[in-house]
Image 1 (cartoon, rainbow, N blue to C red):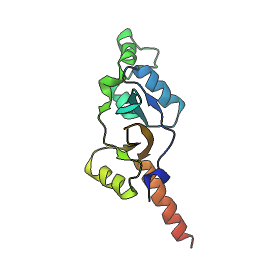
Image 2 (cartoon, rainbow, N blue to C red; image 1 turned 120 degrees about the vertical axis):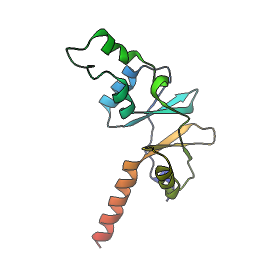
Image 3 (cartoon, one colour; image 1 turned 135 degrees about the vertical axis):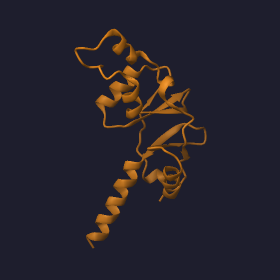
Image 4 (cartoon, rainbow, N blue to C red; image 1 turned 90 degrees about the vertical axis):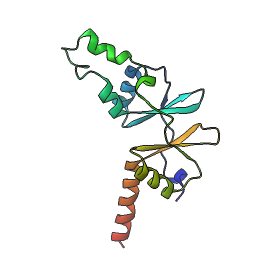
Length: 141
């Protein structure tokens, strides 16, 4: 199976210069767990909701938040993102992404075109959803 048939599109992106406040708001508004970081349309990194969770003060959003707690929202994405993420070309196959998930401690694989511009993303959840669909279709027969 080609990844182009499995990947999620369009991708949500941000800039390395964006603040964590911007990305945190994206995660709050969407059900996404990863945002691709682009600079001049090229993939340069990935930031996950877990990265944000670790980088922000646990007091952010609480009445007890201090100025120092709130200042963590002003950190830049470039400070916490995964730089030069593992990615695959759009013509890659399902087996290629499965191998990457097994070789690296990652939860998503950005899919890029020949210019390294992101065109989609595949997460481990996408793989699990596909397995469930295939299992259910075979069990139903």
